[in-house]
Image (cartoon, rainbow, N blue to C red; front, side):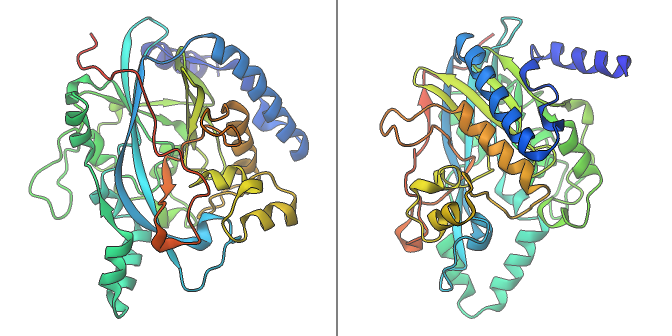
Length: 378
C-alpha cells in the first residue's frame, strides 16, 4: 500500500500537481444522506483555499461539433416531447494556461473531441443505422449534426502548435477514441496508416477508474465507449490519478463519480470567480432545475425534492452523480451577467436552437474567455 501511494505521489509530482486533502474519504461516508452532506461541506471548505491560491493565466473555449442526443436521456426522463426524440449537444474544447506547483507554465486541453472517433461508439453507430432506415432520416441527420472545428484547427486559431500542449484530458471517455489523441502503432480500420499523436508529446490525464473501465467494459457501459480505443496506444502517455487533484493555482480536476466511475470535472479560478465544466448535465437546467423553463424539469425538481436533474444516459451510480453535481454547484460562483445562474459550463451543451423548442437552455453562457492564450510558454 505504501509503495502504491508513493507511486501515485511521484506521478503527480512529475506533472507539478498535488492531491486535495479536503475530499479524503468523503465518497466513502455512510449512510448516503451523510455522504451528501460530507461532500457539500468538503467542497465549501476546499473552495476557500482554492480561491485564495490564485487564478489561471488564460482560458478559451471553442465549439467542436454538434451531435444528436435523445431527449429522454438529457433530463432523467423528466422531459417528454414525442415529436422531438432527438436534440443536439455541442462538444466544446477548452484550452487553459496556468502555472503548476513547480512554477512551470503549462497548457492543458480539456475535451479535444475528434468527431470521427466519437462516431465509432456503438451508440452512435446504431443511431446512424436507425436513421438510415427511417424515411427522411438523412434530413433529420442534417438537422442534428453540425461541424465547427477540429481540435488541431483550434490550436492554429489560438496561435498554438501541437508541441505547445503539455496535457489533455476528458471528464470521462464516453465516445472518445484515445488513439486519435495519443496516436497508435496500429492502423485504425478504414485508414491508410497509423495515427500520429494529435498534440505531440502531450500526456493524457485520466482517472485510474476511467482508464480501467475502457480496458474492461461491463455490458451496461459498452454502448458508450469506443471498442479498441486503446489499440496500439502507448499507455506511458497516460498519467493516471485517483481522487481529486489540483494542477496548480486556480486549476483542479475534481473526482465527480456517478455518470461514470472515473468522471472528473475541470474547475478553474478566473477574474470573475470559479467556473466548473463537466457533462454531468448538458445545460444549466440540470444543475438548477428550479429555474428551468424546459417543460418537465421544474416539475421533476418539485415532485422529487431534488436540487439537480442529472444527464442520465448512463446511471452507473445515480446517487453518486447527484452528490457530484452538488459538489460542482458548491464550487461554482454566481454569474456576473445574471447572478441567478452558476458559472457552470457543460463540456457538451444543449444546443440553443429554436428548431428544438421547447427543449432549449433556459440560460447559456455561450463559452468562456479570459486572458491571452500564448504559444511557446517555455
